[in-house]
Length: 429
Image (cartoon, rainbow, N blue to C red):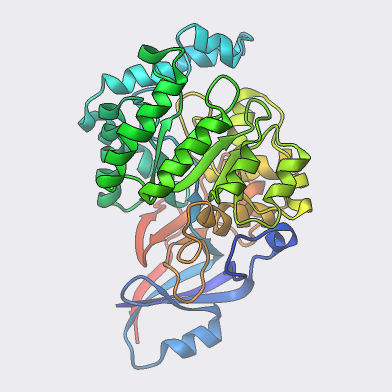
């Protein structure tokens, strides 16, 4: 049955060019007052726009399910383009040590950091990891996220990286949260190969990547290209192997230091270059005019009490910016894009409109999904969020408040907030 959504105080369609939104384009939400959306039986959008026009297009003789948005804001579901959601437990010792003044390097040297999580994942069963991911998936949905990138990278061996990716595939197939898998074997050097980065990268490219590709376990590869981890030369080698295997590229770049990773991302036609805390003018200019999205994850900066990436400089220069949670057990235990939006506005001086563009359509482009996700245009997937607000600016304004009224995935309601006034759902003709 078709679905007709009516009575949206503000309908944010995110209509625009068929590419990542850059510079001033990030201020355009395609806002329609008293808006409506018509969805077909396959969960695709037929029409979106003013209520009268869309209702007329729905027709009088075709049956449909009518959903009254109750004068709330309706927008695309959030697309979270950077997350590490498969792990066995939180890094609470790291948290305390950081509060006491220990650095990232200090904590790693004390047995914490990425390798602490690696040890936990290696000792965990596939079933327990899947149960954990399902639990996190429910929380993402409740916060309005309809599509989530999910990285491996806490296995660092063929067996354990495959275990993580198989968990992502299994839970993603169950739905309703859509999971986009990324192979991050090049996250760190495993303890058994300490000091042998070249040897480990050879294993990633020649032993792990072919199996990941053959089993169809990931859409992207990623690499932590930074001081103390992998060099741009390592990243180039990985990207070449990934291209030959038919996988796209993403990169952790300029988080801890300036390495030139953002420029490498553009040369490799990567979908996104993420973090960018230490990006320089050359890196910014490389991103301008490219289709590589600057993926900013300010929740990590908040949790680490570190300076934020230069969102304002990137946008004002004409780059395309996405926002993501970077959800992980060590550096950003936040799954809620609403908090990320608030941080982006208050700490990085992004406007509410820019932040919402970054969390929807540009997040979709950062995952290679910009033609099907992230906007409410005809032919796009009907991933729709109804927010308990009359004005979209309330979304980043009120933080720490659960305000999602309901979330729809492919035209089906997958989450409803029972504590709020229920929207009217009935059959119509």
